[in-house]
Image 1: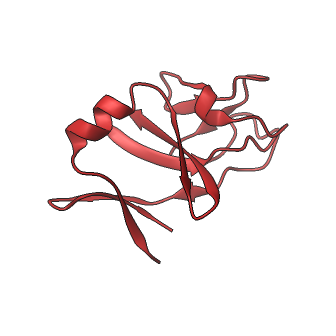
Image 2 (image 1 turned 90 degrees about the horizontal axis):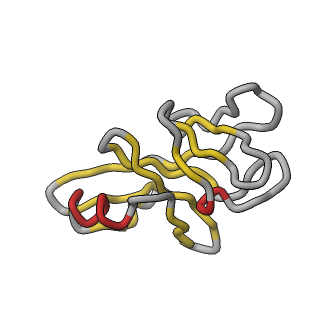
Image 3 (image 1 turned 30 degrees about the horizontal axis):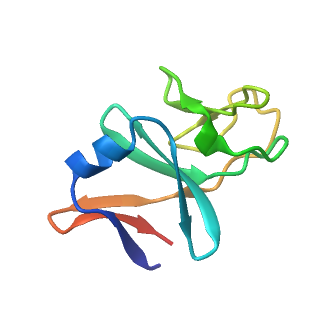
Length: 104
């Protein structure tokens, strides 16, 4: 697994992630989101109808909500709340003194 630096520190990440954000790495579309001061990364494409999750919101349960049909995916596990569609692919995030990295 390769670790790719995406932010210099948590302050930079928190400023950038006031709402979900699209990150494109190695041709992959990834939705970055912040919930309870923790950074999460999941595939950007909703498994229901393919809409862009980075255009959605994060709810109080730690789920990214698809803007098209409001499917709710757990940021930690990728699972859709009611299991009506496939789980999202999740990407590991690592923070250390060198910055914030995503595992690809």
